[in-house]
Image (tube, rainbow, N blue to C red; front, side):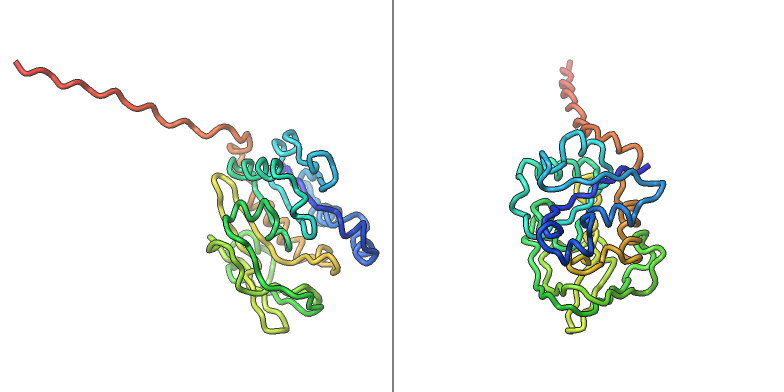
Length: 246
C-alpha cells in the first residue's frame, strides 16, 4: 500500500465563502476523497498544525507527499522545508499542484525562481497529452478540458523537465508546460498545473486520475521505502609498497 500525505495550507477555504462552498472539507479533503482507493493509505496535513502536520514521524511514514499552497508560502517554516527536501532526496515522491510551483519546497528542489506569467482568466484550459506512453496519463485521452481555470503562461523558470507530460493551451492564446517530471536524489517529482481554488478543478475526474497516476509513478520502489542512509564510499585501498630490487 502506498502511503500518501496530502498537504494544504487550508487558508482560502476558511477565509472565502466561494472557496468553502466548492471545497467544504478543504482542497486536501477533496483530493483525499477523489483519489481514495484500496491501494493508498491517505492522511492529510495543514499549515496551522504543529510542525505544519509534517513531523518526523509523518514524513518517515510517507511514500508520496502531495502539496497545495498559494497565499502562505512564506509562512512555511524553513526547518520543515529542509526536512521535506531531505526526504525527497532519500526517495519520497513529491507532487506539486498549481501554485505550489512557488512553494519553498519546490523552489529549493528546482534551484530556480520558478516564476511565470499568470492571470485569473475564467476561461477554458485544454491540457494536451504530449507523452502518451507515460504512466501518469494512463486512462486519459489525447487531451482534456477544464471550462474555467486560471491562466499560467510561459516563460516558466524551471530546469529543463526530464519528461514533459502535458502542454496547456488557454483561450487567450498562451501555452504552458503544465505537467513536468524531475528526479532529485532518489526521489521523483511531478509538477501538475491545474487547481486554482475558486474553480472545482479537484472534483474533475481527469484531474483526479492524473494525480492518482502521479502517486503511483512517484512512489519509491519497495526496497527504498525504508529510506536508509546512502551507502558509504568504499574505503580507499592501502597502496602496495614497491618491492625492493635485489
